[in-house]
Image (cartoon, rainbow, N blue to C red; front, side):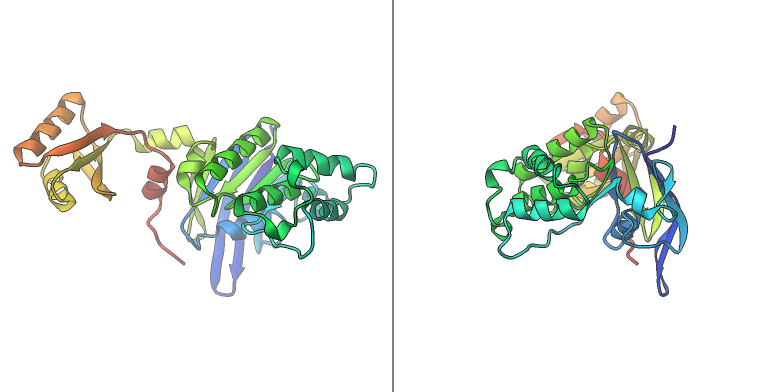
Length: 311
């Protein structure tokens, strides 16, 4: 079955800098894929190229099997791109803003009012349609940007850092909107630095670093691959460097990483060995006050697959 989005060997250079290097991945209809990587990894460049706002030096992108290079106008009608910031217009209401962009995407005079009302209702902006757009909060601005993105009913949504700057309630509400769009059969590629938010909604992830895809796949498959060993979190009353030194001497400890005031430990062993680890800490005069297993999440994936290198 043809993927909704297929990126094949995408390369984009800016002078001597290779921003994206031979990137390939795909997204299916009704799926939400996270696009994660360090700052400067090439996420925005990739997303802008998918959205036909930039031209690749090599490779191609296919939307519903059609090349964006061969048929840019046709494929553009199937893409909705939400940038990381919404430009404001002076003396413009929410309704006027959406009506303007409804005209820009070619909606007829008969269809425009109905479609504007539909996106206002979906994003819960209907009661605010007469508000000036430059008076909106960050959360309402993000909803307005999403509403604009949905005007032409695209099959594929490209969302660049949509949750940036939102408060916790606004992030939860925005996440619910994303789920609702996926349930309508839309494919969604979403970048974010708030990995805990993506872990709640993503079917799969694409991890990019220094312009190259370092890993991509279904979340449950990737987390299974990195969590063949037990993942533990340990916090003691003693300073964390003492805990780290003690862990280095205990059999079965494969890798440690400081997190907040404790340590995340990748451990090889069954339950008896884990009990022995806890006993060994006590015997070393360390007093554990927090000790638990946790599942590998997108943050674990990110830290496991990337090295933190910038380009």
